[in-house]
Image (cartoon, rainbow, N blue to C red; front, side):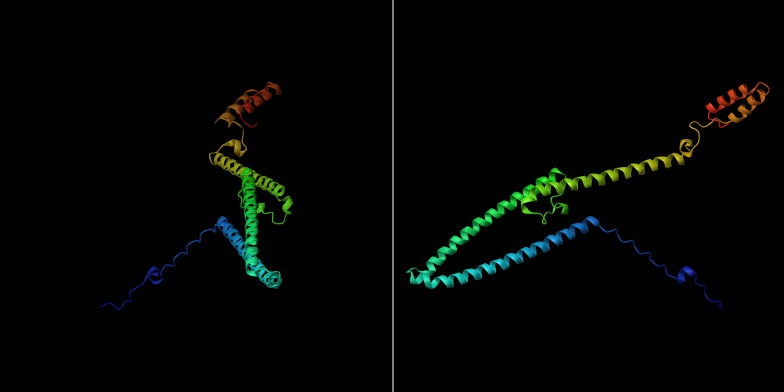
Length: 230
């Protein structure tokens, strides 16, 4: 039986640590939509609370009115409950007419907002079309102005995106030429000189010695036209 201890490798001694997964990038559009919906819900809740408050106030005013006119009606020979019930019916009918007019006005306004947004290529819920701070008498014209401004803003963003894409495409194309050894991109001559052209140039210049400067200039012009830098 061997007295040597069993060796344990580093891999067996130390368990591997799992690499944490990269969290997904946040969905910015979903976050914006969620915030917008939450804002609308809060606004609707405040509106509902205000309507409930006005309803309670209206009911209290009616109660006080009924108590105030009951005795005079009796003294005049009228049945207070019958008169007051008829008053309630008339008042409710008038209120119903008012609500119907308000609903029609709201529907017409929403149609105006929707058609205006569509004409300028926008979402009707675009926050830039919010005119809650505008005089109601000027709202119809103001929403058109804001829709036009939003459209121009989107057009500018689209133009910037298109220019950025064009720059990326041009950079990629230039990099591809560099990778392929294109001398136009590397700063070389439009047409690379053929191999051995320098040797031919040197031979002709050697042969032209003693023939004057004009002969040498002609040779240089000849080989420069072929892309040789001399």
